[in-house]
Length: 50
Image (cartoon, rainbow, N blue to C red):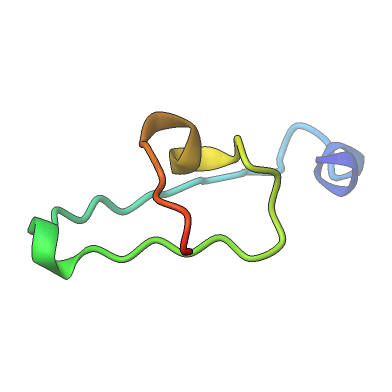
């Protein structure tokens, strides 16, 4: 954004996103070295390995 602001009013920024719908058996979420309340981890219960 800092660089974009140096280009003046002629600068254009376009942002896109994709949406994917996956069945439950196609989903795998892995967080490596993240805070325990990060992202989707905050929305689900986790089972700790014994």
